Length: 452
Image (cartoon, rainbow, N blue to C red; front, side, top):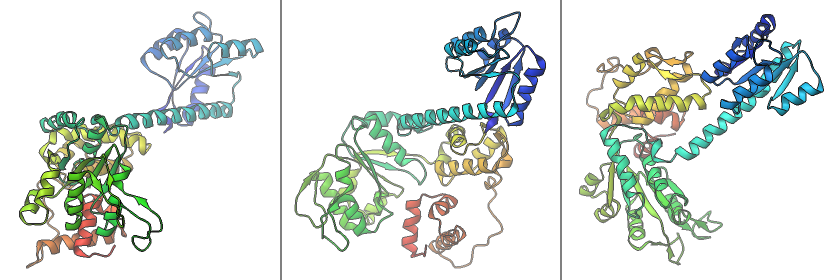
């Protein structure tokens, strides 16, 4: 990623200036060169260079030290290297005293310059990564990390702010990949519980007995393998928030246990007799139609009403297409740092492809598509050609014939089984291809008793 870093060489001697610039260009850096301090100062006002190589003696204008000091007025952290043909202790002391990072003596060698630049760039890379990490820590679970400008998303933003300071239980409903956990984290981090734990539990990923122990903890000897006492997720979330993802998948027994916790704010560890009081805010999420599950007797009505005190419904991406360009650019910015790829934008043709697709896997599928395009692209701007793997709009596949007399469940089972085989049992990859989240895929694997 050397091309990301631009370097400025300032020297009144053309041969010395262009030789140094050529050496660094061979190492993959973008290098500009100017012949005097005044021009260097004007360039620095317009652009923040990664490194400034400045000759000490430049007649007819500011010398190297004066040029450096002027640049430092508006680029205080600029790494400046003074070039001098007059290497003395006094010049070195003066250069370093006024803020030069290094000084090199003419005639310079390509190896010396290459090593010096490499060392400084490594430090700048670390500094940039630290800045990115700090931004992530500040933004990752804040309301601003939920990207959207549609009317529905603005309504959700307002609702998050309204309910953040309350203790009331929240039920978040939406298709897989719409960002239910992001909304839950935003509620937690915007409210007065922000400094307390946020504990996330996927209710679809564990069997009933394991999930019971995971939520409520267990006492030593309560079952085979319980060699020590263990706190459950509710206890671990004390004072904070517990996020119960895919709440619609819990068993009838766990529904009763959870109802008691919501009503009494107390629980018993598995195999325990001591009643434990907990102060935890519960946020639940599901991609199922819980109202229908209640009518069909699959989900307790009293628990549903306990959970559904505040309801947040996240619309699928196909119903808020105006958010797609914003989300896509957000993912490009994030992935360019994580993948260390010099990709900065999506062309109009690329955005058109993204806008014309229905995104059954929602924002998660869009992020996976951006990552896949960036991995294979060799350009700084993603174009329509980079998204050729996305099915064209209104053009259903014609190379697969639906077998006669087959049930919908059987079709789903075959598709999931084929995808798992294709990925060699990689559940994360299979879920991404299918456009669903892992918890949903685990649910289907269990439902169809598929080998993993």
